[in-house]
Image 1 (spheres, one colour):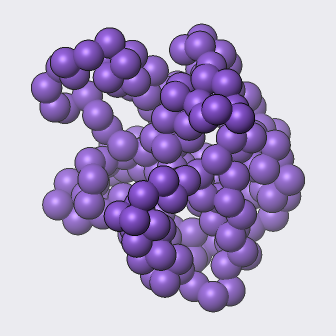
Image 2 (tube, one colour):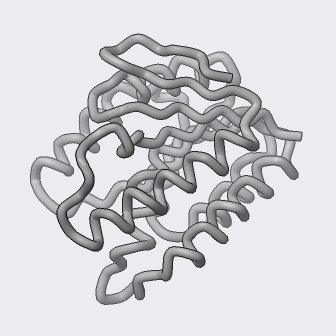
Amino acid sequence: MARLTLIVGGVRSGKSRLAEELAAASPPVTYLATALAGDVEMADRITRHRQRRSPDWRTVEEPWDVVAALAKHLEVGCVVLECLTLWVTNLMVGLPQQAARADANILTEVDALVRTAQADVGRLIVVSNEVGCGIMPANELGRRFADVLGEANQRLASAADEVFACWAGIPHKLK
């Protein structure tokens, strides 16, 4: 069974750095990136993440079919999934060439992610935002997103061997 680790936290909480530190102890490492560079700021953010990673790590960019990418790369070593939040966003909002998916279908994909992680021998570290600590979103899409991501985090946490929460750069082991 794969070792599954979930790391949650807010923006700039230290969750990505913790994931990278944990992954470095389980080489070889594949960095499974879900971000889409839709604007200049996001492109800069992606560049900073790339620069911080070890040159020995393989990077796979897959914003949609994360489960298939994971199945292909989790045979040995470690996969860092960065991040669940953006993957759920991609699936929920969709793009013109990629139809948006219903909430139940997104959670089915999350369940498939868990099953894939449990069926392989490598280690999976999933990075996700905790969006349930803020104010109630003002619109329907924001509330749906918070609900779906919250449920996805709960499903992963339930299946995970270890769960960390990061605040102000300090990791706290929850499980």
